[in-house]
Image 1 (tube, rainbow, N blue to C red):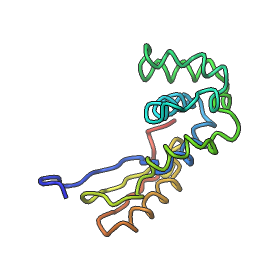
Image 2: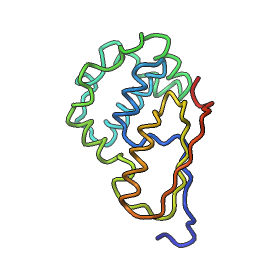
Image 3: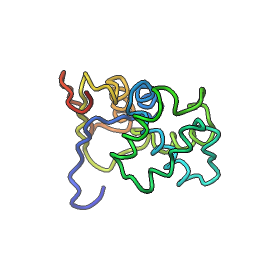
Amino acid sequence: MIPNYLGAIAVGIGGDLTTVFQAVNKTTNHGYFAFLAYGVKAVFPEFNYADWLTPEAIKLMPILNTGGWYVSLATYGTKLAIGHIVKPGWENNSTYRKFRELSLIGSRPGFAPVLLLTGLADLAVPPEAAKAAYERMRKQGPQWSIGRTPVSTMTR
């Protein structure tokens, strides 16, 4: 426990990057893959964009350093067709899989209670991804709870 830390609220938690990004890959928000690739490379410098991203997606990578969050997402959303940002089998890349394991929510004990909220109509974070994260969290101890709502304003 961390002194004076009361807990956390997690809204729209993805839990497993693969599940979330499989859904994202089917939307114009697929630019999130560029941010994910950037993060994987930051943790594992040997990660090669060309092993994971399409050549068209790699050409747009410099926008991440100059455009910020919204400009980058808009650029990928308008310049690349849905499903054309990552190569087939992206989820099997060994470096990505190591990163995924580090990021798997609920795979290690938390420090305090967590309230997990998820929208049942959320297109970016499928409810089953949040449910799986919750089940992993429950195995770590009793300080977890989940709330669900049928409405999502996070993605439309």
